[in-house]
Length: 404
Ligand SMILES: [Fe+2]
Image (cartoon, rainbow, N blue to C red; front, top):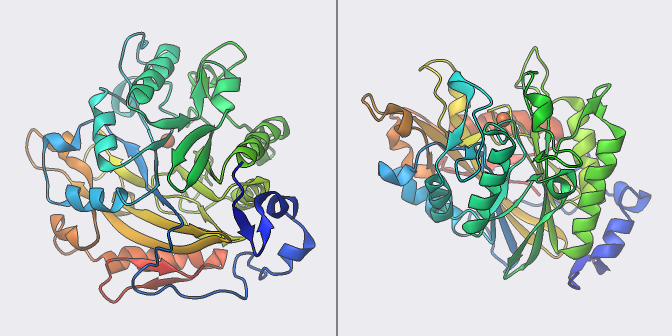
């Protein structure tokens, strides 16, 4: 572990030792995240030279975005490439030697050629979560072919492996601002419950996903200990830890609602050493919480959404997302800027499936005339408020800053 000062003279070990302690909790508001040190960031997000972590919606990518150039691509790329660690979830299995037979048929089978990884690399990503409900779409062999293709391209990854030990292990990324650890988990990997779900879970001797079961509406204790142990292990070896959860456990009556157990669980992950918590699963934006100066993103939607569902299958909200730009200093989060993302509807020709679900960011919303990014940001502000989080939307409407 590098000797990085952590919290007002505390080193990282002291900070973690204090996790859950009275001294820190007394500094928190009842909402849990806003301290007396709160402040608005300026229009120009400060770059004090600290660690910059950028996370996006998930990448359900089936086509190389560069094969059909569009105006918004470069703007997205320009944002992502500013990160020290640029993170998404790879929501597809990758074809390659040894890949197995499709484990699903029809609309919700998602596998892609390795060129989509080249596209993600070009966009600026260097850190990939792999634990999700499509990781096993090409079976055990697909778990391995995906890992091989990702490694060949130099991504750091976590969440799948040849067995549960590998799937649970953190991935480590070296950056100029320090070492980053990624712990990646999925719950309910085969959502909705289907026969292939059990096969997707990594076993003692079988490839698969790092799965965390739920029991009585909470993380199953044995799985929870394994996950928290991995976070603690990563925290002991790194300067920054990202915890990722792919979660298809949502309230059945309203999948816009973040289940209560997830807040408690995300906070436990921060207490164990996570510096940021990112979630995908339900393809919608959920709220943002700042807990102990660590951001928790309860749902970032989809950055790329190459679904094969018919037009109109999903509501408009599914075609909206956000890029979150986090600056960390020695005492945690220094600033957090939200870039609204709009996904394209697709060209009305034979390229429809390849040209829908493509991201545009900020002022480049011209791809869908009449859309107002302020609406997206105002919605995000509204759904983040229950977590004690305040967003200030820029006058231009092109971004919002979070009170940290
Ligand atoms: Fe998913």
